[in-house]
Image (cartoon, rainbow over all chains, first blue to last red; front, side, top):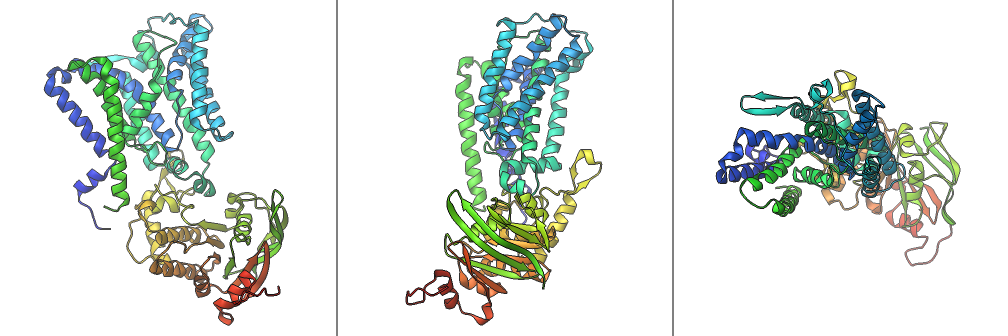
Length: 328
Length: 255
C-alpha cells in the first residue's frame, strides 16, 4: 500500500460524492434565483431540516447495525398527540406529559427491538406493523382530529426545544443546537467508541461479532430505542414550533429519512455508516425540496428529483465500491 | 505432553441421521493434529460440537482434565477454543485492528465515555501482524475487505494467539489460496505451535496437512478409523487409503 495523496483520499471518501452533489445543488439554485441564499430562506430551510435530521441521525446508527425502522413517521406524529392529550385532559402538567410521551417512545423501540432480535422477524415487517399500530393509536385517541395546542411560548420546555433568537439576519431555533449536538455525539459514538465498533460489527457480520462476545441483540435493541426516542423528540419540537398536534403528521417521513441516510453513503445492508454523510444527505434532500420550489419547478415534481437523486447516488456508490474492491 | 482437550464418546444425531458415532478424539498441548476424512465423514460436525456451534447428543468434553460445558461459541472461546472458518470470523467492513479487538476493545479515559484506545489498538495490531509472519507491511487501519484470503487467515490466527486461545481450530484454511499464500498460512500454524498453542488442522489437501501436522486423525462415516498416524512414518497414498477405505486398486480394506 503506497501513501495516497490527500486529494485521492478525499475522493475515495464515501461522503465525497454526496458533498459534490450538495455543492452543485446550491450553486445551481443560487445561480437561477439568488434569493435562495437569502437569510430568510436559509433560516426557513434549516428549521424543518433539523427536525427530520434528528431522526436521520439515529437511523444512521440503526442502519449501520443492519436494521431499519419504518415506524418513525408514526412516532413523530404520535408522541406530541399523546403529550397534548394528557396535558389538555388535565392528567398531568406539561413536563410530566412530555416525559410520559418520551417513555412511550422508549416502549415502542423496546417492542420493535425485541421482535426483531428475539423472534428473528425482519425489521421491515416488525416496523411496518408498528407503523400501523402507532398511527392507528394516534388516530384513535384523537378521533382523528388535531389536538388543541396551548400556545407554548414562554414555557421553559418550549424555550429549551424551539426557543428562537436572531443571529444577524438569521432566525435560529434552539432545535438547530439539538441537531448539532446529536450529530457530534452520534458521530463520536459511531467512529470512536467501543459501542460504535459493536454497531458496525453487528451490521457487518453478526455471527462473527456474537462469537467474539459482542452483544448483538442488545446493541440493536438500544438503537431501536434511540431511533424511536429521536423520532418522538423531533415530533415534539415540530409540534411546539408550529403549535399543532395533528395525528396524521409525519406520514411518509420514514422513507424520506431512509433516503437521506442512504444518499449520504450509509449501506442499507449494514456494516458501514457515516454521520457526516447523513448530515450531507439531509441537506441534499431538504435543499432540493426548497430549491425547486424557489426556481419555479412545480412542487409536485419534487419526488421525481428525489427519486433520481437516490438512483444516481446508489449508482455512484456501487461504482466506487467496485473500484475500491478492485484495489484502485 | 498432557491432553489439552479430550472428547469422549461423542455421538451426534441430526434428527434421525447419525453424524457422529461414539467418537473419541484428543489434542495434546502444543500439538498440531490433522483431521482428515471425505465429505460427510463427520469432521465438520465434530468441530462444530467442539466449538459450541451445535449441541451434542451424547458424550463429554474435557479441557485440561476438567469437564467442560460447551453450549455456545462464546463458551468455547472462554475455554480457550477458537475456531477459524475461512472469512466468516472477521467483519470485512472493519479495520484489522478493530477486528483484532472486537468485543475486547481497550478503553481510554472515563469508562462511561467508552472511548476506544485506537492508538494502542493499532500499535498492538502492527506488532501482531509482524509476529504472525506477514511480510508485506500492511497498515492496521486497512479494512479486512482489502486483504487477500491468506492475510485474512493470518489476522484470525493472530487474534486467536493474542487472546490466548489454547486450541486454534482451522477449518479448510488453505482452500482457494495460491501456492505462496498457502505456505504463508502453514507458517502461521507453525508459529502458533512455537508460541505454545495447539491446532486442529482440517483440509482436503492431504499434502498441506502432511507438511505441518504432528499427528493425523482420519474419520469415515461418523467414526474415527485411525487416530495416531505419524506423517513422518507414513505416506500420502497410505492415508488416502484410510480415508476412502479402499486400496489404490479399489479393493476395500479392513478397518
